[in-house]
Length: 101
Image 1 (cartoon, one colour):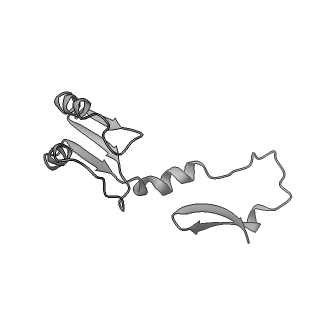
Image 2: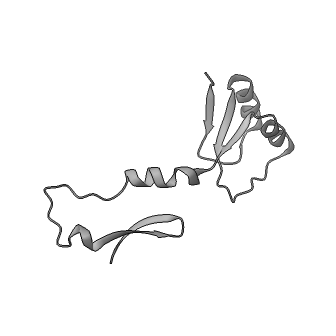
């Protein structure tokens, strides 16, 4: 089983010494990098990424499944003045939102 490390909440590694020690301990170090963003990595980080030690995860793939977990659902005992049929789910840019029709 692979032993993975998630480097969070930063994209750029703030301490190269930590990264090098982590590369010895963990099978890979994964960081969250949006697809359109190009990190300004130094030569050592690029070499570790080319070797497969440093990996990237695009958060866009998880946007819809995680967003569904936070969908607004009033408790069944709560009576809304606006019926649920008056609301629809809309996508604005890259975000999902609820809007009244």
